[in-house]
Length: 148
Image (cartoon, rainbow, N blue to C red; front, side, top):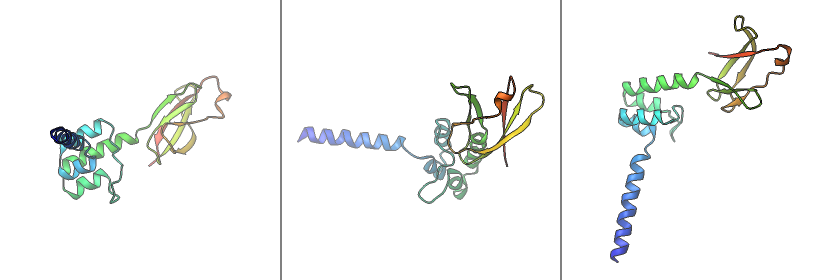
């Protein structure tokens, strides 16, 4: 019986510890826990995730009048919209941007003059972008601009 109590006590302690660290960014925003919100954001928490009520962490912070937290979340939302451009193994551009967001794809062969190639909506991130016209020029550079 003593062994079972010890096992139950360890299980309870383990459950309490894991629950303490599993708090969502929504809960931290509602509670005004600035340090927790920062930690979660720095560890990749989704600033646009919706809770069971359909609210984002920003909605929670605003509803509970935690303006300092709302401002930090707004900054992270803005950073999430800044796309990143890289090249995959097959030299196709990879766009890492906000899913559902529209971006203009610009191209240049001399880095001086930029032309609109396409406007795309990110369906998954990262997303491979195929430029069927790239073979027309010896060198092609790309740039992304957020469509507002």
